[in-house]
Image (cartoon, rainbow, N blue to C red; front, side, top):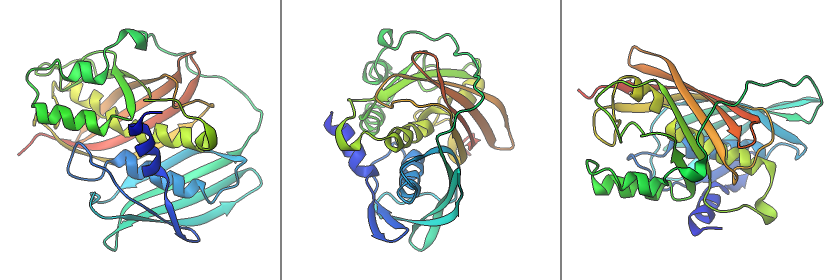
Length: 291
């Protein structure tokens, strides 16, 4: 396991300070606020630690309320909304400086057999044939080297590979609002940490990294890295369909059906490399031209 991955696991390992109350800390992000995927992942950890082990997360719905302060701890309070025979529901509030910055509702279910169908996996290049983030980012002469290093440092625990040029790599002309990214952790998971909730939490963490890219593609924008867009996540929803491992390749197939009113919508499906539909994701974000 890489040191960067161990640091990420430590970041997600919350401190319990009272029943239903947990505390987490932050790490540097590519923007001067707490990374949204980190808050969502930590909130899901807090929820999961109040749920029986035989109940697995199957959905989450979240709102980003205020920018997080990366220099201050985040307190997560868990409301045990329901403990039914099949489903368990939790509500989590993330608080900093006495104010809520993030709210999440999550549902967990014991295993059941049932009807089974899925959308087919789209065609995508083999991840082994694609450049790493470091190779791709350092190949763009127009990017500020300091920005490149911030990107790479923030994503060091994740091996993330774009199937095509990301928005900040090729911009100026509109492209199809569709983006594909392969990702996995930068190292294998094992031992005591290798539990189903961790894989779901890690996928939640990564899911906020690239989902709004397809909005930028539709308008030929490069994003914050080149300074032609101002944006932030507003809300985020995920449905976990089938088991997967975050340390094995996952295809993040993303598109944007709409942008209007200073907001844009991204939706995606995440597949295992052998074609199983693992996760569905939808996110809306603020996407504006700088004033």
